[in-house]
Image (tube, rainbow, N blue to C red; front, top):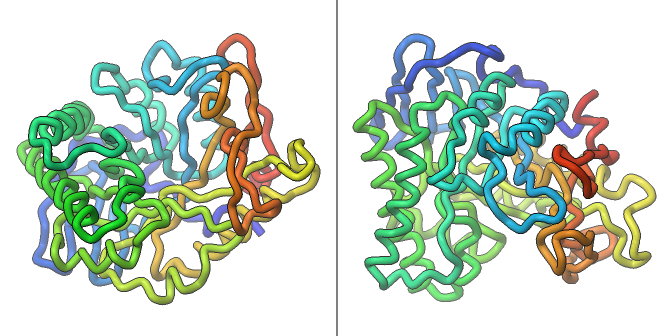
Length: 367
């Protein structure tokens, strides 16, 4: 069984330069993107809960990508100065027959044009995360405006680039949404920023879908809020870590008319019980099981994005040490999630670009 749920062709020929997109909403049934000849046309079709790219259904076969080197703290490593890292990695990603990257660190002061060009040349679309602080006070209008403006700065900089598939505003901000009031204020802010993004893009004749990736908390409550905030998101983006299965009820009882995408899923590569990397195929088997479910439920879900491309040594303790920190997590083979070991590639200290070693999950992707 391949980790690739279906062998869809890339959404456009590799290396073809695209011109800016033009989009227009069509009633409540479809968000239809009209574009000049030769451009990438993205469509969010509500009647069938699908994302279309150039008129073809887009099923995400993606990986989350944050190439922070061993020994470095969290930051933006997608600019020109880090090109030796991401050019090498993008070639590895292209070999895995993937069609989407999710990135998290687009600093508005950095130039990511070369990175996006390299993605486009390899037939890779990009989902850009536009984040804001954890626990932000939504009642503070100055703070709301500041982070909306920061998001718009990135949107305005790259909205014409043909590699962009979607914008993700915030990441797992429903962690704090333990009351109906907090969920409403969260989605109200997302609605404000989504509206601003669409207005900014419309001025240039373009449009991209916007979502706000949610962790696995209060999902049914958020779906119910769609009636109150129908324009807050153009698709539901979910970060789900449920072990070797998403659970069929997620898909069979999905109530929304919007597309759904799993914007993070995966399994770590560390055997916490024996304090060592898994000796067999536990990570690969978990990812294959999850990918099969995505394929089988493709009438409901528009694919998924594996977390993550490489191990992230910066998450706990010293960024120069590969720690085994984590927490109990049901559904995983050892019932424990080790934060720094989620990569399908391991990495090692050294001169950039640091060495990458493929784990067992990579082989089915490149087959």
